[in-house]
Image 1 (cartoon, rainbow over the protein chains, first blue to last red):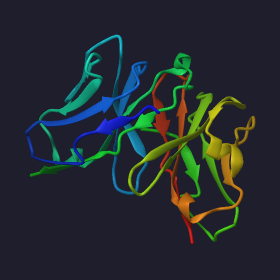
Image 2 (cartoon, one colour):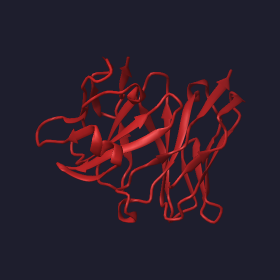
Image 3 (cartoon, one colour):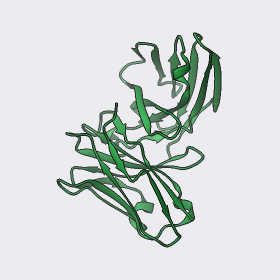
Image 4 (tube, each protein chain N blue to C red):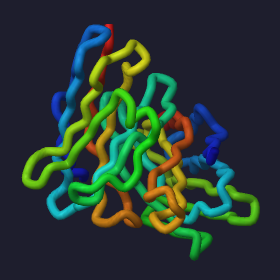
Length: 116
Length: 113
């Protein structure tokens, strides 16, 4: 079945540096790629997403890149702050009309630590 | 910030017992999803609804799990006969429509002893 692989299980950066988290997916019909942040004991907080009609999207310090040929997408967090420390999950979906009802397939998370 | 409400936050059941959890989606969101997140951070989609109708559900859901989203009442997910392997965080998400972003609640952490 469809899979999303998240390559870094942990990532440690210094405050102010950039952090990059990489994911790959298997289903060529995937068209929607959201990212979520989870802090200890909490649910998933939506941070940013990208759809397959573009290859780059930016929201303030967050940049998402999509390479459909390589079936790879990545989250770049620039000018990191200690409050960015959390687990980040990537996900993929074929969208409603792909037959899966827009269910999300998640990666297994990257624990990001931003050290002051 | 998400306004999806999930209750209870924690649920402890013995094997074979029923476990029921509830979700109130964000106002105006007709699409509701249930996911299971285990201790290894592996997610499993369980079921989704548009208003009161099931859009898709997995086989596991069809056997011991039941879910509904009645009109004017919270959505619910119930495990008829809990097993140790059901211990997980159950996450509810809602969406404006099935192609837009999903907003998650804080989850119900189920422990089956």
